[in-house]
Length: 168
Image (cartoon, rainbow, N blue to C red):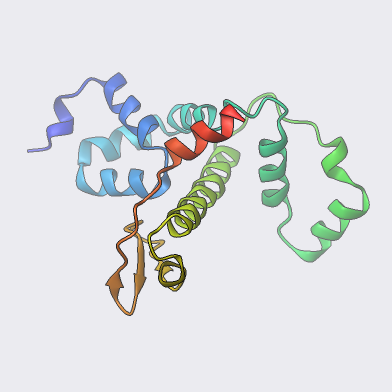
């Protein structure tokens, strides 16, 4: 039996919003058919809530503007045009984002958060030189590995990173 199936729709949505990262969401939807169905049915509103939570402290819009710039630069020609026209200075932020933009933003920002968490976890470990030798497991988000053994580093999660970032 799927324990998530008895939860109200709003609670299921809140679970996704609190998970935030694409790796965590993928793990839940692989484990629960009802959560998979809910995510497919309400994907746009779930992603909008997740992105609002992540970008809440970005009052200037710089993080959103930079992430959209990275998404729009898909090849050398568009990168050159972006640089020559100084598009980052004049780029207007969209009032609303469509599902394709939300998905792209969510994937890129989730991936950035994973790399930041890994970097901070390694930098604050008891033995940074050994920790920096570890390779990050991007598929499962289960930490860093060195010679097929999981490194024992204290994981720093995005909630604490974002809280500190918004306070400065």
